[in-house]
Length: 194
Image (cartoon, rainbow, N blue to C red; front, side, top):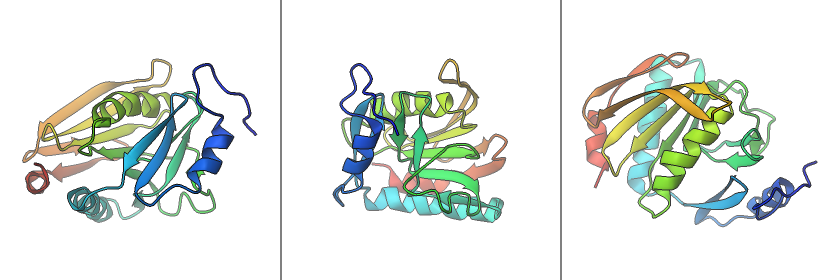
């Protein structure tokens, strides 16, 4: 049981988990860097992108699930808790894990930017650091503000950074590196950006 509060932390991980268990239906909570983060519930375009990506992953890699609800323990980064917009792992990998699962075995996390003031810091800075520190092989960022898709790969858990990044504008093809190993045609994403 985690009871220690880190310097600058708002609460312990256990306190956060109890708090998050009763969260509102209008927000999703995360605990990154010792601070509570609030993600607005997604809009229709965000949901359409999520479902498009679920279909792409199912067609290309039917032995994998892209779970849009699973929370992850990103303990190596200040004992955090993240709720990616998608978590790619073997089918039924999270069965029996509860709301917050260990990231071991996760092949990719996905974030789709929201139109809020925190998305830049959260999705473009904090999340890549946290996911790389947790050793997650691929981080896919679908950036609706910039109209780009970026595949971050080759994590360096010690540095908390991905060594490789490949970015394409909406409309181009992108290959998601191994261990995911799929190619996405991002043309349809033009329909979901402002």
